[in-house]
Image 1 (cartoon, rainbow over the protein chains, first blue to last red):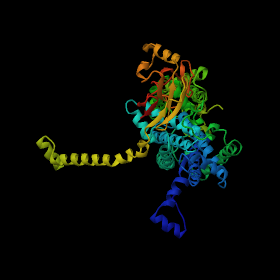
Image 2: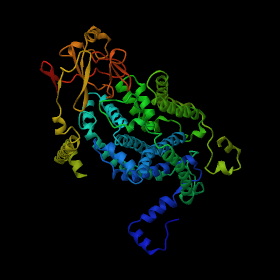
Image 3: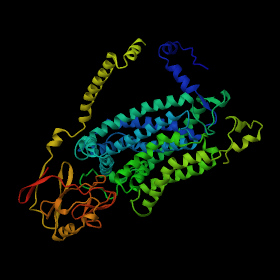
Image 4: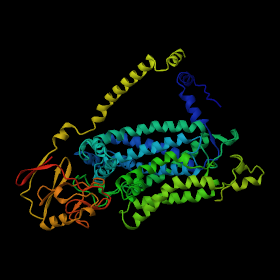
Length: 414
Length: 176
């Protein structure tokens, strides 16, 4: 049903700038598959976390000073003097972790249900670009408090570029604006940390345009056959998303109020010292799997290439997965490899926090090999050899029964 | 339509093709020239470059001790090596080194080892007189350096860098 109103002012505006009919079209009547599970909540949660980060970040920037002599003290000033500064800073710091939790679950949802398959490849690429932008933004944000972990994290990560043959050192000097991480580095990181979230907003808009072109996928991974397979976004999914948001905010509030520093590192409350490296430096938890891949390789350039490759490989995923069946529900072999993949990612996260020797190093090497084998060997081959279980004829069929036993195998056993 | 037929009849590029390419190339060069200042502004500024030399008085450093100076924002290890350390550094066979370099090429006077204290792996500051080779050990990713600051084991690809320096007096050096 098209947008309708009796309000003259809204009619007058909408005739000239159709914002009301646009909102009605994409937020209210937008037809959505009627069988979405709670795994489909994480996209909207990610969008809300982006807003939380931007709002708290703009406020923090009103009190923060991006200078090596004042940055650390200005963060303490926010914590101690600014009204509710402690709350807003903890929201921002823990909000970054929450954002990554939500986005990682969103990505694994996509991996399991084949959300990257035709016709949603570009939607998937835009998501990977958002992930890369998020990682760059989070990294630069962590540098701003100018503690020991800020400084040495910045040093180690910018030095990754020194592995580039021939021009590596020039690139690093360009990034630093000097011969070490120093005030010019802090200044430009602040500038870019402020800019990139708005770039993310732009890519998210494209992500949504691509999403609305073919609509959401669904747990069955089959296309909608007609209007009987869809329900309007409002009120069904607005309510479901809001309920999920409430549950998620309880989780967020737990960290925020009861363990605001648990996800950080105590060394970052020591002001940066360019002459002393802390004995054990680790990145924030959301980078640990990638850090483990970096350290699993006993060669500098090789480690850097694999680390970046572990994300860039996601761009090839639509072609690496040769199966025509989208949803992992109907793929008995794929399903097992998928859960081992999840386990490998968790193992990498654990190993990334340990010193790179002995058992953690061995585990990170095995998990790194599996990570790449999953994309480059397992997915292409499983698609060829696996015999998927029969797909239901429509989204409604498994629920309504359609009076046919053939639909039964499609139902997932809980 | 007619222009493509004309070019086809002559079997080569027309004047219009030439104008397209020339205008496009001119625009590309202009765009690159306009972009360069926005890239180069990120490189070290004049005041950063002006601070690029440091003088150090060596007379205060007894044998077997070292200091850490700062040059271009980076730590520089200045070590007064003992006879044993020099002997160890010179005794190593070049074939055992991942980045082969004789000790003599890394020092101007054997007792003074001067090098940038930045791990060649990912830029941490190694700890002195630790590790399996009596030299330096980087705590970040486990690189071991010997008493000449050469990489012996671990992920670092190169020896610790020796900065350009000169003896301006018997016991005084200028780095940079």
